[in-house]
Image: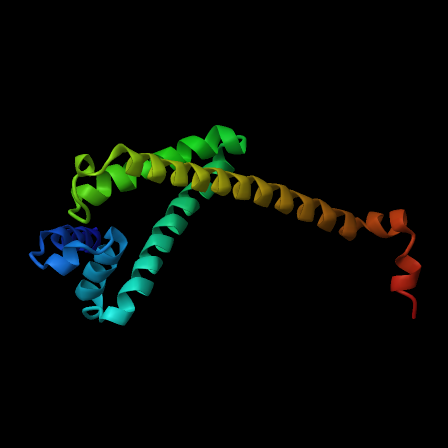
Length: 168
């Protein structure tokens, strides 16, 4: 828990820089920079963009993991869960956490169109995440049913190919 608190402290310091150039960087780059400085080394210019992309991907994958676990515990349709999930990710990250950590300007500093664009992107993310989770569940169920048929030999009897496959 102490490591997590130290990481949050490092992230919150990212927004308190007086460097104009650093203030103009995207929030994901600022977060990656803060973590890198606290854990590894200060990022050089060529490392900033890939580190920012990695930070954005890690947050997306982390929230996707949370969604996947929740979908296994309480399966619902993609639209029923995906849209609220995407909206929640947008609200919690873009609208609350990032400004609170000082990684961006306050939400009131951005026009409504910026918020709408970000929300719509996160709604699509939520739908994609929910669709993938639903497809993944169906795929696993299909593979499991195929394995069960394979184990009992039904699939070969139905297709009448067991003699050809196991012929000496």
